Image (cartoon, rainbow, N blue to C red):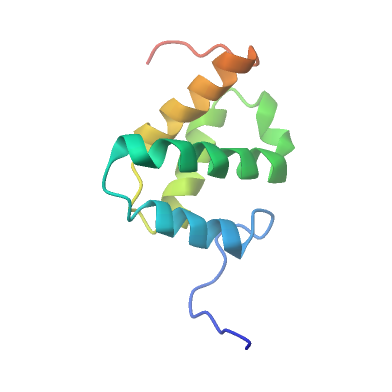
Length: 98
C-alpha cells in the first residue's frame, strides 16, 4: 500500500521516517522517557549532516531541525541539551555556558 503524505519533508537528507519519528517522540509525555528516543534522532541527524559536527552552534541547529520535524512539539532547549551531553560524552565539542 502506497501512503500519501500531505506535508513536505522538512529535511530530505534526514528523511520522512525520521520526521515521523520526531512527531511520535513528541507524543511521549515524560521528558525522561523521551530522552533515549531523542538521542537516537540526534544520531540520525548527525549521520545525515556530518558537516554540522564542526559548527559552533551545532546544538541549536539540530534542536531547530527537530523542532521543525516535530511540528513545534519538542522543546528546542531539551534537544540542544541532549546534543551537548552526547558531544561532551564523546569529547567532541565543548560548549560555552549559555
